[in-house]
Image (cartoon, rainbow, N blue to C red; front, top):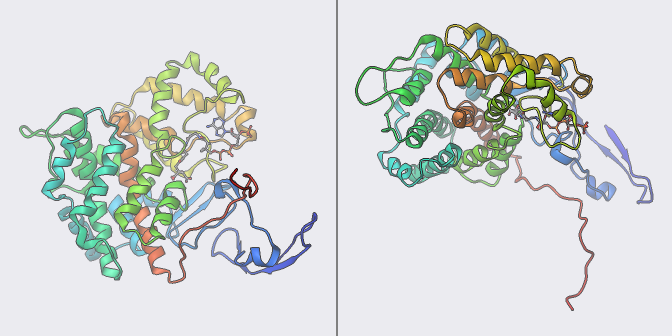
Length: 423
Ligand code: SDX
């Protein structure tokens, strides 16, 4: 039990609270009833010290730089499994056997076609609209086309909904890109695997052959996998908050897409490349490092730092070795890599970054690989959405299975006017 004692002029109340052990990592103190016992609330800006739920999907150890999906280390999954196998693992809790994989993968392929009517939505958008605005609108529109699947309650309905949204995300993302370029929309090809199909829909034209190299598919497949889930990050917390109101999965996923858009979160990958291009040369790196350290300068080193990791982000390690492995095979821009390597070299030895445990995160490396795959910067965060959709949905399903789950309703520290009468 944990005992909290209130001093400094309040009631001097003492309250006892249950400590709940975790299977890995820190235990939690269940502070339910704290207000009535102690006459006060807790205050935790950004919720960095607060567990908002119980989950068995992903475990992160920020000090060690460890990331496990359903207990499996991300490094081993990245080496031995593909993204769709990991989707099955995240949704079902175990890796699929060959029969389970074949059925799951086949259903994802068949569900990759959206309702024909959704095409018209894209025509309503200007071609210079940000893809995240268009993608979140398209996913929201799915709820109109699948209105009969809005209120899932049974296990098999959950999984059907999960496969439907996972399958359609690459197609809607590719449609978004094609529209922004003024290209004709390309439909999914049922003979292609998930990740290959996405690259095909991004590159193909109604006539002529489209080349998609295996090495490119493997690279992008790893990027989807590394982005699949990440515990209670800002967008997943948003998805859970919306899900806790009983809103349908499409509404919760759309809220997650919009939370991910922020440059402090999923929008960082696009900002990393823009920043490397702004730095422009290895000679300029020192100037920008100085700006990142200046407390009066809002400039931040994009792709560095993390709310949880105070060590190397394990996903960044996998991506860094993938980037170096692909350097020659898919022609990654050596200029941007040289600048990125110089930024990393200085930041990892500079006292400002070392003291604050600021290490490269997943976004620092993903951009150079995506760019080498011919994917434009403005599509980087939608790529993050494709990878993360399975995590968002797995958390929604986990939440719906919990009969004790309550609607999210945090309190606040009120610092406004005391009660007064209208003159
Ligand atoms: C993702 O939560 C998740 O799991 C997210 C994610 C996922 O998979 O869902 O991992 C994906 O969002 C990765 C993060 C991508 N964002 C960026 O790369 C943007 C750049 N990073 C920063 O904006 C920042 O590091 C955050 C937002 C990621 C974390 O912000 P915090 O929690 O405020 O960082 P902190 O508390 O560790 O900061 C400690 C100090 C502060 O300075 P002091 O007040 O001590 O003087 O470090 C400074 C910060 O100002 N700092 C930076 C910095 N990040 C933190 N200084 C310069 N450059 C940076 N990037």
